[in-house]
Each structure stands twice: as structure tokens, then as C-alpha cells.
Picture: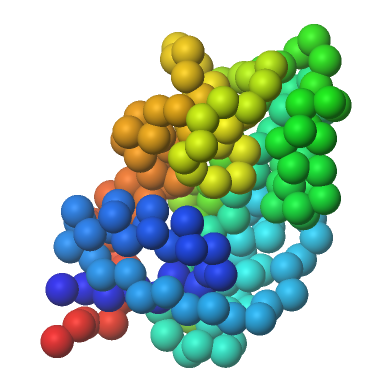
Length: 189
């Protein structure tokens, strides 16, 4: 079985990655590293920088992932600052900020590096911000995000989230690229 290191301190992301990549025959080994995250206006730049910093510490092929919630009525806020904003404001704070335009999307960017460059993979799920928190499953903004064409939040419909999340879409793009033989893995024996 092939093995990849996923540098993250987020247990929810690690669990999701393990489930998704297991289907493709890729074992995910979680690794927590203390890496200062670059402040930038886009997820791609942040993910790329984090992957390069992580590779300097690990020295093996790895992936990192960065994600954000982009709300149209707030001009894309919180976007790349989603984790920090969630810690400071939480879902209730975001709900107080959103007024008429509730259109939003989740975006995930995975950065892979083997020390010879960085390859990026993204996934997006469009939707809107609910008027109140709904559901108890999931993490982060799941209780306030309703995917396009659905009536329930990610938190209320965890089965749908697991099938169609932004992270799942980004990992599917990564797996597709892996199947084309363009990736270097540590072989697990």
C-alpha cells in the first residue's frame, strides 16, 4: 500500500483524508508540525508555502491542505482567514455579519511536494449561509453552510458532506493525478 504524510493538526481533516484516500489504496500518516502559516489573500499561496516549509522539516513526500469559507456578501471574507475568524467569532459571529447576500462557497486546496516543486489540487462546493446554526455533526462552519441544491447544512447531512465536500473534491483531484503515475510515495511494507 502506498503511504503519504499529511501535515495537519486538525483531527477532523485527518480523519476525512484517511477515509477518502483509503478508497484509492493510499494510507495517510498524520504529522503535526509547528509551521508558521503565511498570511496571504489566496489559499493556493498559503498551501504552497506550508508544503515547502513542512518538506524542509520532514524531507519526505507530503501533502498539506488549507481551506476557507468565502461569503459573497462579505466580499469573500473570511476566506483564507477562516480558521482564525472561527476561533475569534465562531458561527454565531459570522451569522451576525451576514445580511442579505448569503451566497458562499467552501474551497479546499491540497499542496503536494516531493521536494522538487509543488503541485496544487482544489475543490469547491457552492452554497449559502443558513440563517441559524443547524446540526451537531462535523466541525467548523458545517452547521451554517447549506450546499447548492440542498436544504440541510453540512452538519445536518454528514453523509452528503462526506460524498461531496470541497475537501473530498480536492482529494479526488489528487488521487486522479496519483493514478497517472506522477507522484512519489513512500512504499509501505
